[in-house]
Length: 238
Image (tube, rainbow, N blue to C red; front, side):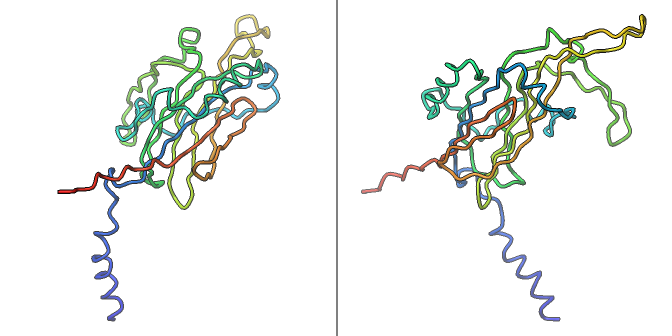
């Protein structure tokens, strides 16, 4: 019986030490990611792509950079030479190059970094911009506003701190394609241009300070994560 009484007591004693660290006490990391696509027009047709069922993160969650993140200027790039080589090659198109500082958070608390780049298809496919109606958990029919843009690359990435560092991508790469479709009036097959969303969801376990590469037939991502060395406070000589 004593053992069962001690367990809740130990839990209460340990709870103060189990609280999340304040943001200023968390380790911080500089994250740099370079996104580029394969320009070979046949690359899209080399695979059978699943239909994208939307991104895991709600649209509102991807609208802005989290407050605890800090975007850095281009002068902080360490992959600038790699970007120049990619831009010089006709085989690739650089979509975006991002660098920022963020706290290292566990999987439960990790925040998404929004990614939106490349061509905006919103004017070419206005039907994709319309709002839609859905039924919520309370059984109510609510209107979900349409997106404000329809970029070539869209979604988010998430850095998770555990025993190792982990990067999760929740992205779509949009590709205009020509498909055959039956005309309901003429009952004839015809060609129609449509926008296909290729889902790019991946997970990569990483070590800091190492260059990592996420490979995909349509999209490449170079990643480098570096711990931010905290400056020691000045000594008090008073």
